[in-house]
Length: 431
Figure (cartoon, one colour):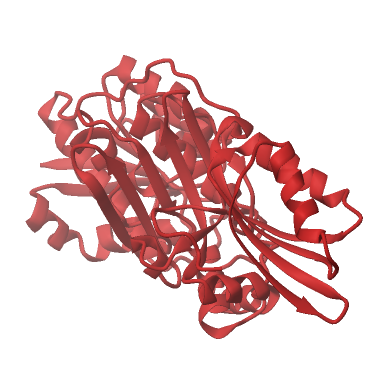
């Protein structure tokens, strides 16, 4: 059974996908029963050398030729960016052609619209590779667990930041040195802003939350904080207390509404996410029926992502040949998405304070004034100053922030040196 596909993009993922289709085509056909023929491929530069040899006339620098080619029955979008990718995907769907994409930014920004167009056209829009690379998480959330209540999703969904934090944890490296090594190894781009700022993880968090809770969450509703301010001191202290610092995507479905955020978090060393090392990704799903599920594996790179893309291509091709939708279309219901200040959070704080009587009482008074209780505290003196480590009880994020702002105005507080939220079940740090 033959299916003609068109591919938008020939970068790292595109090269890995084409290698599977062209050089390993017989293996794919044996396993799937499908003959997947690459009809057209859109590239930016026709003169550039390519790692995979294609027949004359397959390459084009006009992506619309791929979408409109009558021999293309299925479109794969791996060019990246929101535009022109978004309009090309919409055009393909309106033309009745299934689309497979690995574009997290596009799905996070226009996913609800594009999924709606796909439903109207009766064709699938598949995006397993848009979140966590080769880890199968989209289909479990949208299909396998569609009938289950999901309360919470925690994820390490950016390999660059996890690699950096692993180096800082295991080797005591400073942030800048760990980032430089990640760049040398190809885990981080020359401009790593999207990764280290949390923006990449935020797009993925929006997608995971939307599928888990059935309410569309735009990426603009995700509170986002990166790892640029994380220093070796707090990584070391966390380890001494039995904790690990990770950049987490956190999505919760509460009685008040849906909360979605990305930020560094102090995670108990016994938590399954604490042992996820290097560039590996993992998604931890919690619900009352199945309790806890962990999905882990390579979250980035050409080969793992191409594997996820090819899996979607096979599914879409089978559905196309069957002439009917195999998987039910994704649907969303209205729901309340909370501002982050309305969320319930637990804080770890490191304060640099004057070493004199009454300081702790003043600090405690600030938290009391904002109706935030302190769960544990530890103090260590050094020269004429002292370091205070505090962990709060779970409380309203807005009140926690008000406490931090008030602390900065105290004469005895020289610096609110670190504020990191605490996530995951586990005992209070033994301060």
